[in-house]
Length: 304
Length: 302
Image (cartoon, rainbow over all chains, first blue to last red; front, side, top):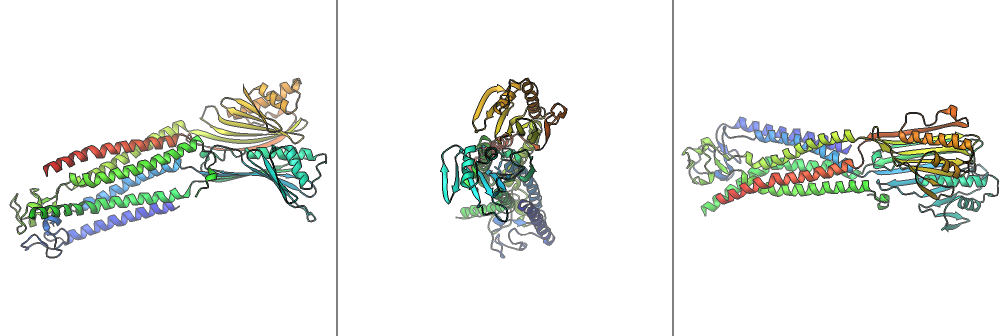
């Protein structure tokens, strides 16, 4: 968006500058009825010395412009050609740079399983990862028991499974950090701490399923983290369940977003704008001014 | 600003991309400095000074109180005093610009050609199959990778088999090597040096608790699973869920796929590095010899 705006500004500035140059040269041509000072356009006909009475410039250094003197029309053409060529170079070079800038990817996976118990209709297994396209490593997983029902007095319970396989959860106000490996028994321990009767016949099966979903979530999102996935966002979700399943309700949602870095997309147009302004300055102003100064120095040196 | 933790472990592709950015930036700055320094001196040295327009006698030779050119003895007020060969002043500037534009054109054409020849298709497929009357309830397949139009898949296939007791065993297959590893119900990995096939599928089913000595498991389930896996890995247009008539206990399933075509991940950073270095080398060659030779000649004449 900003890049497009700057491109439009560049085009408008080019048109304006070339238009002004053409208008200035045309105006000077129209006014030129005789030889004039190269600096201030003062008529030099009738002068007796090579010093301009208007600006005080030495005519040997600032020049004398006549109707046959080459004008700045070539400068106008030069500015236009320069702008076109620079625009082409900028387009090709910028597209090359943009294609190799690391892209920030974010990915989130949520699996909601239910029911868990009378106090907790759902358990939410979620993993999120953010990467600039680095190597794929397991993500931390959060498992939350969602209390539900109007009469429910159950409090939310959370378990965090770290990327290295260790886990922690809060039980009765105290934080439990375990160095054991995460698995089915860890989930059972956490469920028990949350006040759920884990002796129920199907609770072990549910704990096993939660543990399995957590392991899958930890390694999910490989495609979304790839540099080749480009920029944009996508989301997918599915839900279902089977009366014969461990959980009757299972819903899975995944979302991923990719954002190229913002700073280069702002800085690059400014860079090309600076190059363009420098080129204009070089073509239009710098050469002649410095040449006049050099001639003046040579004259003064010869005089002394 | 990016969070440092977000970078995670830097992989080869990101390393190459960052290197390409760094090379481009270094080359751009170096090139700008070379152009700046050389144009500052070379342009002026190449261009002439202010002269009589008719005979190109230097204006500095004119007497301060006379408009008569010492060369052609004409009145310079009628002829004019202007810069000698003004185009020489900007010649190095144009050389640099035209060289850069030409190189960009060549780079654009060759990159486009290479990109179209090496273009790959990125694949991401997810599918789910549910069963009844089996030791397992459902199997989830997740395939990610890329392939050339008719080449093998480069990526991984994860197949999670959910058992009736809630546990899951996972089969991970690397492509194109087809080597696989199994992840048991406790999350432990069991790598294998063999390629996946009916025997690999049998090992997977065995880990799920199926009796692999049973001819039905061996003949039907293992061969059916390995065929479905082969379909996914080979990019077979045939649906990964069929044929249903040979799989009576199949209850249904779903899935989706996404993907697109693009350049191989290593192509663009390699090209950016290559073209940047070529530009810098060409720039040095263009600016240096002519400018310095003429400059030296001018100085010697002066």
